Image (cartoon, rainbow, N blue to C red; front, side, top):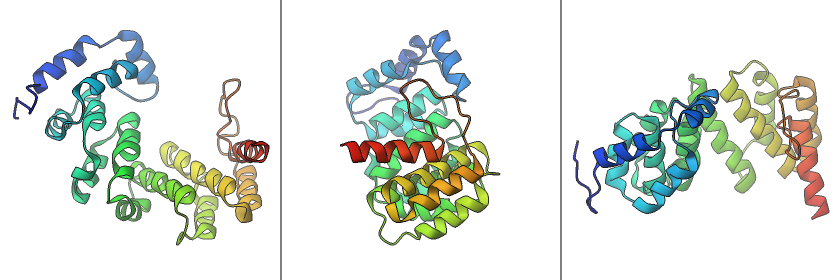
Length: 228
């Protein structure tokens, strides 16, 4: 592993800084969400802001296989610098939820391979990989729905979401809600699917937050659109 980077920062120096930021309370909170690190995300972002964009350092930090280092890598990398196969390998190595989410949202979505990877991941037998395909599909439902088979997506959701593993189920539910929110022609069907399947109906939702239960989510966002 190369130890020096363009501005003189080394991987051991960064790892030592991350270790110093380790906090037992943060680890407890993170581990409840499946993330095995104890660094406060606000402090992690402050480190990234200081380091700025450093693609070589980002690759070296990712290679440590340390969760906090991987998260930092995703904040200081250059999304368009990764090729398609590299991103595919990174996703399959991103087994903690926060690393997975940041990789999809901060890197894949901003790069040139998003659509190709969406299609490749969408029906992958690994449900964690498939959830990334569904997350990218939700992005297209909102931003670029042309060419998507929205009725076909609803068919799949109706048939498979109820029994899907947690991360995949959540991603499919998000897609269901976005179809209902963004596309009035399919709104009643999306709400009906959500009501029948009852996925996340009882999910604990803090006051003043929108429930992830698709019918409630759709109705609340449409209400806000109409009010705005």
